[in-house]
Image (cartoon, rainbow, N blue to C red; front, top):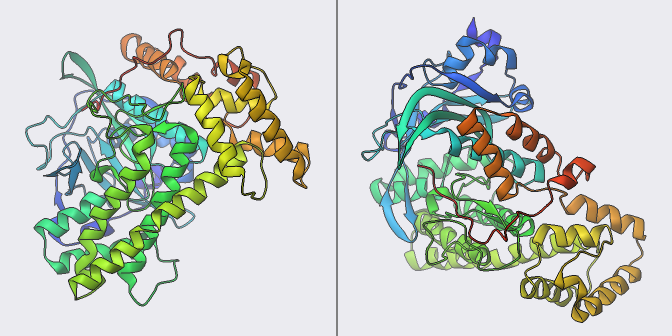
Length: 487
């Protein structure tokens, strides 16, 4: 009856993989679950009844106190290069309750994050704190609004329990929705601890689940590698265009399907600077904004290594095929990034000088510490900001070249303006606004600040007066802002 009321329609295709890849587990009940927030539009798109999810039985499922009919709870095994160092990992604080089949025939993983210990917990308590779970909810929904592929957040519940980190914190569980949780690290796990048959089973599963519509080459596993490279190149280009810094681009945090996954120490830039790092643990700047494309290639090389036994029976030929595929990342990334930058500047078509025009603007923005998002907004609406950049002669000269480029195109200025409005968000999840929302929620149980923030982030290209309020910069320069993994 609960399934019919709530709309759960679960399958467990991942559990048909070899047992190497997962451990079946029993949920870890919590003391007193309470629903903090439910993503009603997402629930409805999944075919779920939001009212049933808000009821006691529904909250029990979102808290891991019970599972819906058809669920086969499991924790996934994977490995990963964390800051370049390889280690054995797995879902240490999450369980997959199943794959929801939507009314449109789509398939999405439903995962509870912070649900308790698993065989992969490595001594951890398997729980999560309210602040990091709400943070992931906010940022992932903001990314969705921006049109960037991402896992999403269905709900957050408090557990009624205290967890212990540096201080006592309220416990919480987030329900994460993903096209899948297949990672580069999943393939690394198979490569290091499985047999060739296990790698093949995983690759076949990934091809069927995520690339069934792609025209396959005779070498289907080369197709898999090429398609993952294409999706990651586009995704990272979208990150760069939005000024987003993932913060922890370990191979276990790179999704095969091309979605942004595992929001820990992520943040959006204020002042434009290629070396921007917010993560408290990224001391060397490995995952700085400007390094994200090169780290993407590094991670993809680790993925390619796992596929070598499938690419060709002769290792030298397999390596050649992998290297040729990896060499295409640069062009795929550059094309997506240049296309997006032209759109942000209202430019149609392509001219040889465009790359230099874009590069000159970014150089001036970095030199004068101009805000990334608001600079493009000022250009969109022809505003002169009270900032050193806009008062500098070099910028005036650049602006003249930019305007001349726009006038040369056959499209009208009105078309150019609309392109810029559709490409430059009025609002991003500013770090100080996110912290403001989390402080109110965690310390005062006031969720209204977060709800208002989520509302303005839901349609970032609307350019409303209310959104303009959220475009203001932090009272300080924001350069000392630090983010944490939240484990």
